[in-house]
Image (cartoon, rainbow, N blue to C red):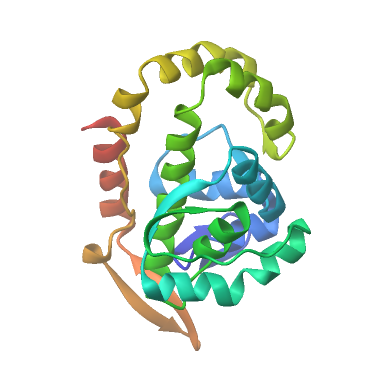
Amino acid sequence: RDTYVEVPDYGKTKINHSYAYGKESLAIKTINKNFGLNITDYATIDFSGLIHIINSIGGIDVEITEEEKNYINNRSKEAYEISKNEYEKVINTGVVKLTGEQALTHSRNRTVGNDFTRASRQRAVLEALISRFSSLGIQDILSLSDDLLKEVKTNINVNKYIPVLISIVINKTEYTNNIISKQIPATKYSQDKMIKGIYYFATDLNVAKQDFYETLYDK
């Protein structure tokens, strides 16, 4: 979120500002311009949508520490106010089932650790969500799809991916065991930088471009 990049028409600033300035279209343009990519599709979801989706599939299994559990219990009331559901506390640590409200709170936690730790939590929540979906039968997924897609904003023609969905359900172990989770730009070729009193994550964009190519295209 703090990566120092060129946002078209706005100059050098934090990459997350691109979405604030121009929503999906400017965010995609910014990513493509700075990292040499050609992204065209997007899917976005807000806080209430994420809560609803996770609760609709019965929660997700996520590994949490004692500190993370305490954070969720202390801060999740805000998420429960969004959903209007009854507040629930997390009792255990380790791999636990989180409600949508708890999962959202966990994803937003940057008190325990730093912003990179928070990003890893967000990836863990997404992977848990994928894993939970893949455990459902195809009929259950299809019956939920119309309701859940109402929570997502996308320019993708979802119908053309139905055959892929069936393949994922049939071969779920192959798919879920081969999810790659990686931070780009990486800290090894980046540095913390203060510019006019504002913190930025300054990176070597050429190295980041190559990192993307190697990760996405294996070359």
